[in-house]
Amino acid sequence: MAVAGQAAANQVFSSAFWIVSVLPSVTATLVSKANASGDQEELQDAVSQALIVGFYISLVGSALMLLYPQKILSSVLKDGAPAMKFAKPYLFIRSFAFLPSLISLIGFSAFRGTLDTKTPLKISAISNIFNAVLDPILMFTCSLGVTGAAIATLAAEVISAASFLALMLKRRMIRWSKILSLPQWSKLKPLLQGGAALQLRNVALNLTFLMVARVTQSLDDTGVAAAAHALAIQVFQVGGIVLLALSVVAQTVVPNELIEQVDKSTGKLRGGKRAAKTVVNRLMSWGFVLGCLLGSLQLLMLPLLQQSSPLLEVRQAAVIPSILASVYQIMNGLVFIGEGVMIGTGNFMQLSIGTVVSTIASIISLNTLPKMFGLTGVWMSFGVFNVFRLASVWIHQTKNGPLAERNL
Amino acid sequence: MIISFSRRIAMLFYFILTISLCSSFAIHNQPLQHTSQRRRIVLQNNNDNININQSVPSVLFSSSDDNNDSSDNGDNIVDAINHDKDITIKNTSAKSSSISSSVATVEDEKLSIWPQNDELDKRMMKIALPCIANFAINPLIGAVDLFWVNRSKCLKMCI
Image (cartoon, rainbow over all chains, first blue to last red; front, top):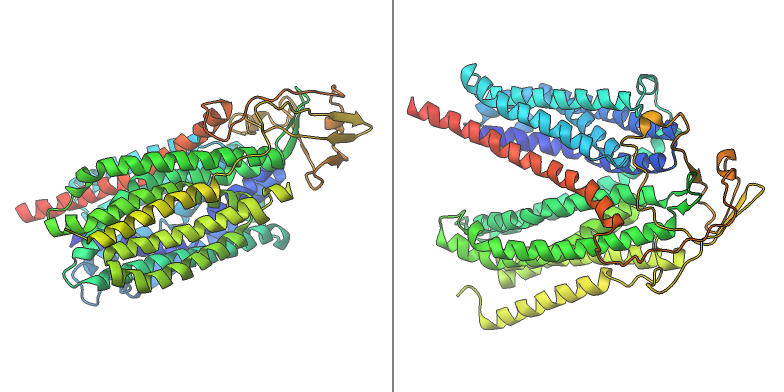
């Protein structure tokens, strides 16, 4: 019950956090542009505006979780569920972590925008190790149970946020005067416009995942399909993290590269559209190569991953979806990086429209393919979703994007 | 047997379609860089008017990792140029107009679209690897959290 309670509270927290998850993407792009052009003021504005917007959103989020924990938890737990008594105190403590978590996310994106990815890693490693060490102390030595786990997580979040704030101040990426002053519409506009467009994409993505979950649950009453689906997802996630990281790299490297610069020491011109196109092509080929490698690795690891379920029928049902999940990594490498490029070039709306069209195609597939192929049909629908996303990337890179040959 | 022979054939067709779509959609030849081609960069610095025929990729990227603290002292200045005009760029700052070279010819390195383990790849990996590690930490710590919460349940049951 403790695990179920913690999982429910974490799910609610993640879902609430999903609303602000677009902030870091837009911030990283804005920071990257400002950093490449050497405009410290613009960089400070981009980070400060994100922090201000994040602050107000986190105030609302925390207040809702503190005032209506029962109502919010009832979205994932039934009334009277035994896990509720564990979930409520956990969520109460976690709700205080909304602001620190957001500061950490924005801090990470700001550092990423300056192409410094090592500092966030150090901060993340220290705070997470602190969390892991504090967990048993608070849970067992102090006899706080699940509440102790929540306090340890909160403490780690606070440490992470404080470190990011201190380092951003030290490196003059933010100024208190900018954070404490009233935001100006002209400076907020790019953040909010980009954020709104990306939010549309988030809605489409989540709608697809929700539909996949619903169709999978409706395939049988025994839970075999759902368990096999979870197993296939596990296979999929092996390479997903690597490809997602490359997408984040594309988001920050491309805007940085787009800015034309003259190196004073050498007199050489660097950057610009053609240079960015070269970087994008290399990134895309990396996506393809890594997608193939990760897909092959997943196929090789398949027998090992299959051991995670003791039920033979679950393992059998998961075979084809797991193979599909491996094959899709080829596509994912290109899709993730291509979409990262779209964010990097600031084409948020095109990305969102592409995702919406892909969602529509996947929903149509989900209504037809599972009837013919069962769970395999669900994963084939995932394939349809990704093919449409890939088509959107292709259109962006060859037809109407700023780095398409005709627009160079 | 999980699926029938005909469905297997359908699946095979589906795999082939997926791979061919991937390669034809997004891996396209780059017309910009040819191995045998030399590119000339001409910087005609004439009364603050710089005419640029080509640009080269910045394999260094302008990271502020170590440069931020010294950004004001002018040691590591990289001037940004207005990129609204693709070919001819005017009105650069006084600093950029003082570039000593009036005509610079650069022989480009061979830049393939495929990974070469060259300077560009190394720089990208330098950025990507910490990102991958950062993304991997959270599920790991989540698993540690779950381990302790599970253990608390076991302890209670034992007691």
